[in-house]
Amino acid sequence: MKVLLVAHYFPPDGGPGAQRPASFARHLPALGCDVTVVTRAQDHARNAVYDPHDASLLAWIEGAQGVRVERAAAPVGGEPANWSDALSAKAVDVARAWRPDVVLATLSPFELADAAFAVRACTGARAVIDLRDPWALDGWFVSRHWLEHRRALERMNAALDSADGVIANVPGARAAFERAVPRMGRVPYAVVTNGWEESDFPAPVDVPKGDVWRLRVAGNFLSTDFQRFSPAKRAWRLLRVAGERIDGRGRSPYFLLGALQSLRADAHPAGRDTVVEIAGNVDPLTQRVIEDSGFGDRVRTPGFMPHDRCTEFAATADALVLAMHGLPAGARARMVPGKFYEYLATGRPILGLAPEGDARDWLREDPRSRVADPCSAASIREALVAMHGAWRNGEAVASRRIPLAARFTRRAQAEVLAAYLREVCASRSNVSA
View 1: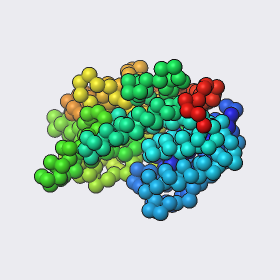
View 2: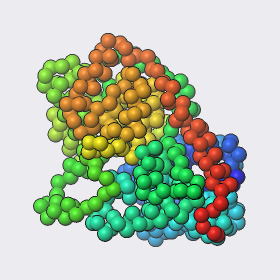
View 3: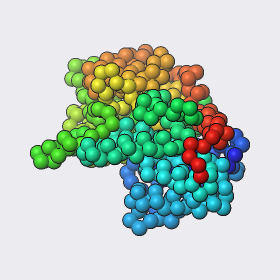
View 4: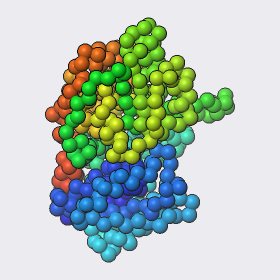
């Protein structure tokens, strides 16, 4: 099976946006797939804070047999929409010569869905879209007003309906897509999660108890909800529309540090023993949240780490923090942060600041991890006290990888992907080429 993989983010880009397509390219050849990747020509000067340069990820694909990478030239301006046009044109050129069986476009940017349909139109290849986020149904996908949101929904619905196959990256997103655009009588939606590489975590490493309790975050906090606006700007922002109601403050360190500061004010040992270490880019808003928390003197910010160093950082934590957004009562999350899977691979205890949803369900299978309301300092405080007590008693030294973790290796998820692509190729196409 010949697979044309179209990806905006790809090594040496860093971050989860690049890791997912890189893992596909790494593992699909061993599953009987010839893979050609169409991606961007690199210009590290244009990389943003949340997609940093990370040459260590090149090792994921350098040893893969049967993979070639074609890079589109930079468009004028270098904006994401322009890049999508350039990638679409490059994908069509490659497809005409190579004749793939299936084109797999991994989104976002969501405009990249057009590349899959363009390749299908000129070659007859099956068109599959892989959604790393639930598009217009995502609370982080914010439109400036209702009409813009309606257009985004219409574009998403059209793409979901037209594609020969659609992949969500968690069950919660698949359920949302199924409600929005049922695929009755066609190849159903699939779930291919993110995951962890076995070469990054060959075996869990025990972490001896030290003098401080090291809570580590292997990634970025997001503190945009703490941005200060003028009254006019605040009024304009009330017109914004998103696919779900979320409380973005949970993605910041605000409630975590508030809980720790309250423990320190009460002279609880957890407030005295804890150091928070953040291996990610700390933007000015997050820095301000840290400084205003009263616990800033116990926060360490070593900055962005390449993937290979970040995995070691996570594997040697006393406990790991997974920060997610808040949701209204009764709602379930439609996403899971990519770091969750690597956290599972370490075998270390996880403090899951997660709403109801897949991440919280999976964390409940680990008896040493705890979950808490991401937007409640009181809930987080309770979980911290329990986890700190286990650390203080020496119960957290041994690293134990729960059975669920094996389900989320990148290789296992590539097997799910390969089987789904074969199912799509064997099916009758939705649209005639």
